[in-house]
Image 1 (tube, rainbow, N blue to C red):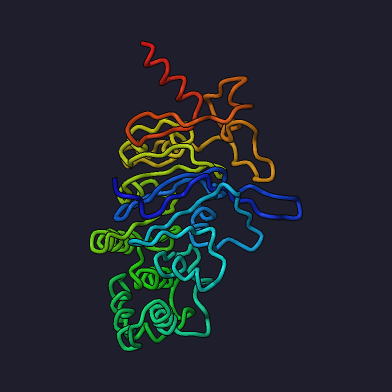
Image 2 (cartoon, rainbow, N blue to C red; image 1 turned 90 degrees about the vertical axis):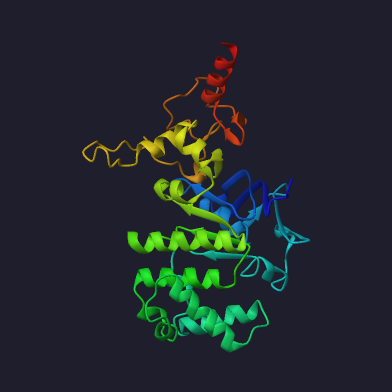
Length: 337
């Protein structure tokens, strides 16, 4: 079996704060293979962005990684243990080299006093031996491909001269221009209208096919995930609660939280149907619930178990895994019948 491009094992990330250590990600494990799109979904505050930034060691200086946490990147014959990298020079392989990231806030991602083109050229030359002229050609081509009109003119403009959607597209072009092996896309289509959103998603799919690039696609939009991803990982309060193929997780959701996210979506078949939100609010990381972290909002709590014990993985189907006592009990009941 071919080794995955990147493997994450027992990733636990805590942050030093005035109130003590705060857990943002807890024991997350997943793989992404070359040419695969993994969708990472969950509410705000679920730990999705912290997980993604861990793959490039971009979390703040107050981040603490557990000793058992492992992130293994395979670039051809080279195996890189990401969390063991310390020097800035060594980190170039994960920061714009083999891995690129599209950040959630485009305005904060560009230097305001340097043109968009100069920033794109600089990062291309930093990670390759190409000439400045060739770097300019590739940059303008990528700006065109993400739907920025008059790209050669826009190439010489500054970020403040771009609208929010154009900045988002320019950031996507910049991330894709190095043709990374793994692209981390953190809410990449949030600021875009539906036409450009579809164009960008099609572009990402084309690059996956063309370069066997993998994508970690972070979004709140399960509709986008259904159209884009091959597999889905559902995260709640820093823990993965369900993983599987798009067909398995969205077509046959097993965890109450996944069901809650899907029930909260509007349906075009009945536009007047009321939306059903997930009850309650996501707890503060400073006050993580004991046992199953979702039990404070769950309608299927098993008294005496969910409040005190951490659910183990329940294998539902090939590649479909759920962390839930209710699901495990239902699975056991089916087998008994």
